[in-house]
Length: 400
Image (cartoon, rainbow, N blue to C red; front, side, top):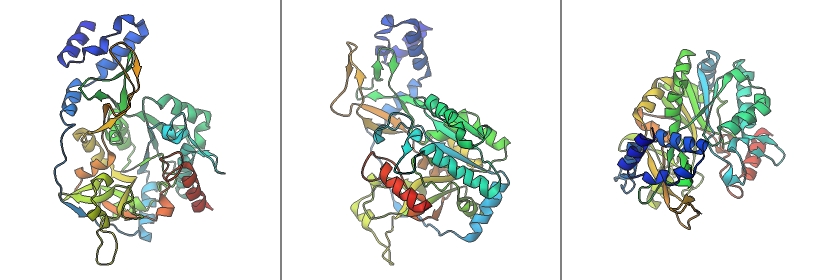
């Protein structure tokens, strides 16, 4: 086995991964070999070949969004009553940017609320139960870094009085981080620096874990996919399902209008006639400030990670694989002498997929308008904009 691994590493010019192998104990050796065996070196080579690629110029045109109707609520509720609705929560992140040590979902929203982000989301599922007498399935995507701590948190909190049988955890895949010369990064003599494969990894993870097959067997037709860090995530409002059913969409999203032209949010639009989310870094000043005849921003429908997919397309998306995007990060690394170095500048690529790129696999995406103060209270930062404090205020204002 070791000889095979050495041959593979030589083929891909990654022999440094075993530089300190003889210094390791048995369990450390096995850990490192297991990591190496898990890596798709052809994929890493291909991805490194794309890091200098420039995005081709695109034709960006606006998409239409629509207000909700009373009938959508009832249509969606009927789907829930028929056992056709499930929630997938993406919760693979750590609370580092919030100044919190642990999975982001276990972070407590204080300021008089004193609930974890997981409990807040479970409250919404219990709201669904109150309106329908149905406990919908809850699938929680973790990362390898936070899975054990997440499961333990649920056990210690009695699954927030939600049926344990209705909750399933699954982990997203990881890819090694790669330095600017193409070398895979190590952060100890026996550990390769790995990074979760982004929000778009949810489709592959759902497929590999067998959850899509389970959903089909359980007659699930609609899957809401959202993040853990929006405490007003509208998973408990059936109108998005009703909207999709009534208008024959295979994918739909709850959107809000941009607050101001330069707001740092992705917006929905057609990219070369394909439904997409245009990231804010792609938006020019002209695009941001373009207004229609009524004075409204043309590119205004913000993606807030409140997405709905029909079960029929989930497996197709997973099989096709979304495009990986390179992100240059600053990360500690092990040098040739075995010293752990923290660089001053970005030094390694992390490769991620984004959940919104899945929209390119459907003919169209239904956009349902929502009110910002009712469905959007994000937590991205420790203080200031989109912080625990601002989210707490929005949460209390909504539920008062």
